[in-house]
Image (cartoon, rainbow over all chains, first blue to last red):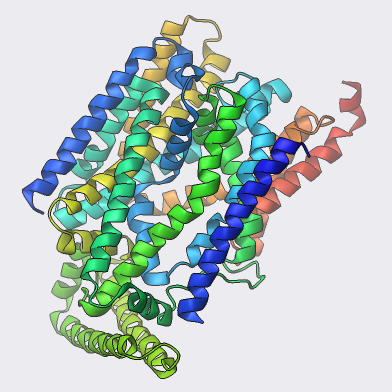
Length: 32
Length: 555
């Protein structure tokens, strides 16, 4: 895996995890 | 609707048509018409990619789904960011450096003419008809709500789109897409603001009410092949679907071929990778807030005004009885919601249960009404697409309603324009230039390309006009589309594996489609997202096995 690709992949995955965490927090706060 | 709203819609349509047509300046050659001279900035390409996926169905159907089913649909997009990163290092550089006009052109260079022709014909059949349905969905809603004839509604969306795509080519499509994304985002933000102002409880209580009614349930971690939207179908099936859609569908590939360089093409995709899920979540949240609004403000029993009138006329006494039960259920639910908003968090278990029961009571009466409507109209009754337009027309302030209607038209136009440009490029490059007239000057091909765009536009408008009577045919075509989406991805994956051969790809493609068809026939409960995995894996497996055949090894 090349370094630029690895960097982009990590950034995109990190952003996706943040979005999931926010959606999960929304779900837990209001439906849990 | 107030004349000021119509003025906004007409002003927007005029502006976008003129803006698109003036882009024709740089399109004297085929490179300009189909690829924007490979000179479009990455952010224009990126926004255009997003706009093409965002159709009128997203604006009225997905928001409506948010109101009736909540946020769970967002899981459908969970595979998208990973798919776009994978494409950024695989197909995007492959196709961009190959200097092709279409994705399928590349398949002949790598495999053979029959594989290229089969994939391009599959694309044309499926996209040509789906282009009609993209126009039909909002046109049917408009004609029902505003009382227009269907051909007039179709023409309102179709004529300006065909005109600027025909004249301006992909440059017109991309630049108008940017403006269309702006108006779509403006309309969505305006709706959220209006809803938060109009809902009689605070934002936190509104979300508590939505949560109690199950509208904020996002994640479903159950691993089952039969549920449409789960975390796993989104991550696995969704990744394959997005790889296929963004990597091999000409309507998307054509867009990143217009970027200045491979890096800019990759960057354009990253806009979707970062923003697609938040955007879809916001669209669904609009629907959820509309649901909360209608908890406090009585909604109609059936949102489709034309069919509602037919139901009432067919059996006025029965309608009155259902209507009375509906009003009573709405009153119970509203009271439960008020009680929940007054109860402090932590002590609200009983209030939440009452709210959920109230919502079930309303849903039960509505389902009965929908079943009765189906008997009257003779077709399955669904009014999800009418919920948001009903809210916009009856509740949004003057001006903002016009912006929303313009945004729905904009979303339809951007999706249709992208499809028309890709249908035209595939028709001309993969069929006309390949099989009918291999040698001619650019002026000739440009003329044929404009004619092809116009012809596909006309075809889409005709399909849209007869969409209601073509209902079952369109369903068959959509189903047919899902049969080969994963399989086409499999062919492109094979193309990147050095030892594979043309016959392997062609037979693999047929085997992939056949396998998905068999699964659909003998295991119909398997959710369609998994078809993409099954199709792609079958093609690669069959292709690899045949790629080692001795006859081909000698050849």
